[in-house]
Length: 372
Image (tube, rainbow, N blue to C red; front, side, top):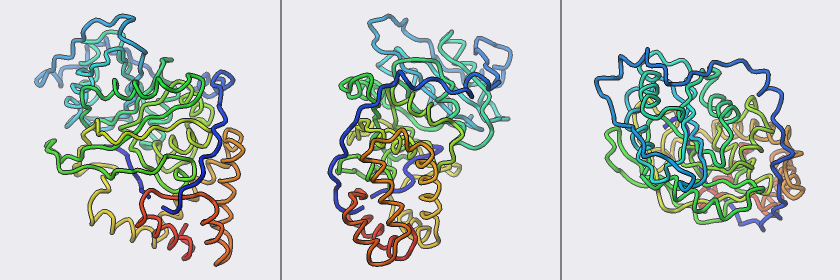
């Protein structure tokens, strides 16, 4: 997968910040959406499919009707994805929730990626868009394509190399539809880790503490490949804009939705098979070796660099945060800049935490050594 859980875990649970509700309607489309000139290719174009025909799949849908439920736009960022893309698209085509469309933003692939997407478009007329990505990396690709995607009820991020369980969308929507439509809502969850062949090798960590902005400030708990959001959450991300400098689109989504007082639902039941292979941009964090690598990166200052970027981004959009969460952001800034032992006391009182006690210990150590 192209991105995912950057980090996990920390200290005592915070009291839930009051969820001041954000109404989506005032979040008008920013100017960049009107001014940006990008190529949109309706994949009815059959001229570039030749390279993909040998492994042709049956993507033909069962006709959709209004009874098929809310509309979903699946936002997929691709780059040189031909190796696993057919399997991912087949798992999307097999969804029990049928009322979806696919919006693919390709960042300049030179392999058969675009031809494979066009083949799907032949089978599902008017349900697949293929556009040129910004070519600024996977984060910009996901955020830009989410902002450009057609208006629907819900939006789902998708990587190019995973496998969705057939009821992935159905389950996410059944949870999200319990939230009022004018309140930002985000679904994410655990994953089943697989090797390159798709054979299961384990599960991602199970996080049991409530999702919150206090957690999101120091930890990303859900990979973007698991995320589904409602229209109000998408409006919030559009208001922040696609050019914001953040570590990853999934961590940013968690931070912004929780920071604005939205609802974040973390599902303990895996609905995605997260494929591990040599070209993953972000890998799973469920092995002892991966955790040791994270500790080394922490003491080399990598986590501090990530926090620097996220704090700058959140400071740019603090008007979108609730009053309580603005204060929480200020507490994090104070913890990072204050002297020992006062900053540890501020951390303890703040309600900033990670999901497990080992990682909370790591957070305390990072604070003590100036690596937060």
